[in-house]
Length: 145
Image 1 (cartoon, one colour):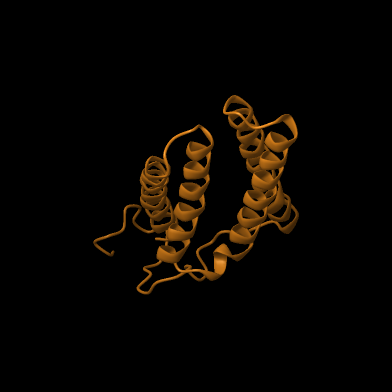
Image 2 (image 1 turned 45 degrees about the vertical axis):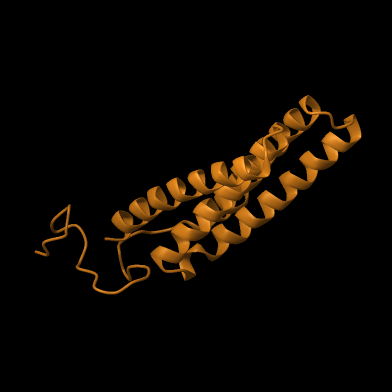
């Protein structure tokens, strides 16, 4: 039994980086494909609507606010979809950085829409991105091992 195993006997030892081969997880293609597009689209819609709310509260016109929200929703949903589709091909560290970066950029963008300075928005995005990266790494690492 490896010293780093939190659940002894559940998974074979894994020595290298990357996804664990034969970890016993069975994906159902129909369920996986629905979640692959449903999660990023749902989160993109939420981000877009919140961007519209923030834009309207901070001096954007009605059309300008909806345009900002639509672009934010489409870009975040598209990047989230691409990230989820490619996640199995990435090693744990790269996957955690990618999820942290996407989340940090989204939170920094929303902070900038609230009227904060550019430096403040960058600091908020960096803090949220680092936190998401660390949490993602922890979840991915223990899931694989």
